[in-house]
Image (cartoon, rainbow, N blue to C red):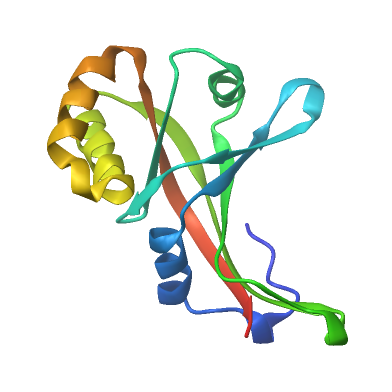
Length: 154
């Protein structure tokens, strides 16, 4: 179902790939866009228990794309260092593949709180108020991860 990594010697363990997903600051969500063009967009997100959550407005291109095709990939790049004398780069990255769907109720609330905890840990109380005030204007999307792969040159 998924192609094997070409440079298998650079493949990282599932645990290392999951750690990259947990620790990343942002990731790129890639979807099938309009007229068959790929569409990738950088997102803030939270990863937990083989699930990636992110949020967006109640309408827009991202939701239009997901309504047409729920299959997506999500890429996070960790530490990098250009090695000019070697014409190369040290890097670490992880890609998750899965299906995206909208969530509601307690799962939506928990995902929004997890985003606050990740990005604004010193402002939890204010973040909870922010969630209550903006929840009706916010959609939360769940990416149910089916496969993770990671690669690094260290």
